Length: 310
Image 1: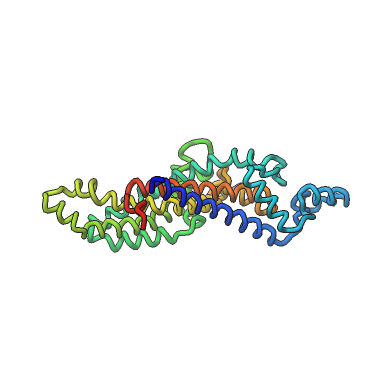
Image 2: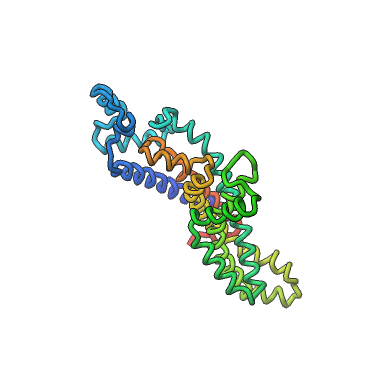
């Protein structure tokens, strides 16, 4: 078997274990949440009859031992039979299918924006040596900004004061800018620090000295050598960054009244809609795993040392 295929299969096996771990943690966490699951199914204060309560318990297998419920849950996840949402009374897969594109669009836009901002931060730091302390401080402050506070600041500046962008999401493209910027700024601060360190290391490397001795221009040096060293760590962290952006979407979608699985998840948790919570969290984990696998493939393509056996 070719080493590349063996490497990717090993990574795929590890990522399947991640999905199983997420499913187990979500199941145990939801079982540990205080409150009666029957109330969540029938609705709080429903005053349902004893027969209705008994039917709900039997239908959802709540009278079975915990291990049996766990096994049934794993089988349901593996076969994509994710049941019906308690609060919406609709199939979970249908609800997720409606909301997922909006969150993916927001996360991808934020990731692209974060990469561009991080590269600008790194370039100013590396080529404007006198400003690197200022840029370093900006990166640290950006990385530490909480999404909720940043969203409020951006709404006040760009919507209330300047009147340039809508404070809530609509069907127009410009309503995507503020939510994407809110997610991108903290990620860009973190990625910018990583890119700057990689570019500074590359500047001190022998191949850079050799390129300069051959008369390589600054633009050529950046395009042929520094850019690759700046992009590689950003690609390596893309999986983490994408997972972080999708998690941050829970807050950002609520603040900007934007449709998406983050906002739906928040509502589902508040009413303990277990099928919907489990379905959304598994989709987020699956997307994260898929991005991590793509990152591994991209890393192996960019840097052959990654796929080389130890």
